[in-house]
Image 1 (spheres, rainbow, N blue to C red):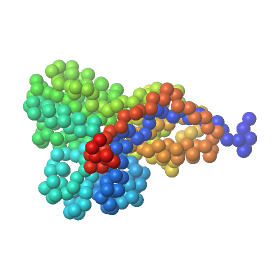
Image 2 (spheres, rainbow, N blue to C red; image 1 turned 180 degrees about the vertical axis):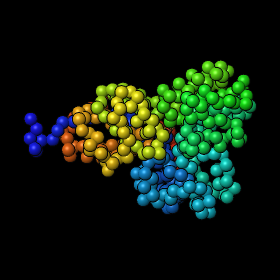
Image 3 (cartoon, rainbow, N blue to C red; image 1 turned 90 degrees about the vertical axis):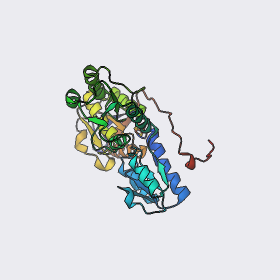
Length: 322
Ligand code: SF4
């Protein structure tokens, strides 16, 4: 029986891997190292990664986030975000003589190269992704206008009418739902059997691993919380994956300040994960808030930590020869 001073029990399953991926870690380090090397302020075109906490932290250190290059004064370095940029952006920076540093994740850059390769082979390209997402804008901007057709969902996969079905290729956004993309690809491959595929899938290892981890634990949870920002594609996908995997009480929250305690009514097992742009400190904040109200048992079933790390641009390495 629970006395007024006893806290109720709550088991937390922490997904692993969760949170920062290698590409986000690299992008944040690029801003920090550029501040050390070039001093304040450093300009960053667009949110370096989709997380307010990360952006505000970097702002406090001297980064200024802008929407467009014309907000960057002459003579100051500018960093391009992890999501990648259309070719026109570095070209404009070069025209103005700005020192630009590219924080595009190497796995997004790989998709850019694929799109260019297909365009060089005169393929029309289908990009599976979400309209308006910076990564999609960046990928579309690697090739001449009109060469890429965007497919956002299954319905569009059924109805899209490419001009050259016999010379067709596809690429995808890196942060999509693995399962939904598989369904879309089945439709496209059935309609266009000659469609050329990426040498390796475009959905990145970090997206795949985080989705697998939450998919495995969601059926054993009464609720799942995904820590991440509403504009973070991979975080939103984690909520969808957890819901489809059998936990309808799955929700996105940005951190402890957004906890809706009513969501925990009747919950004895809570799953927690975090999107690739959400730092671990936000997970710790949620756990600290939970421990105030519950007697917590924390488990990390089937943990599969990631070891991938991407090199910094040469100019920002401790040893530029490395
Ligand atoms: S989610 Fe994938 S593609 Fe995006 S930054 Fe992380 S590793 Fe790179």
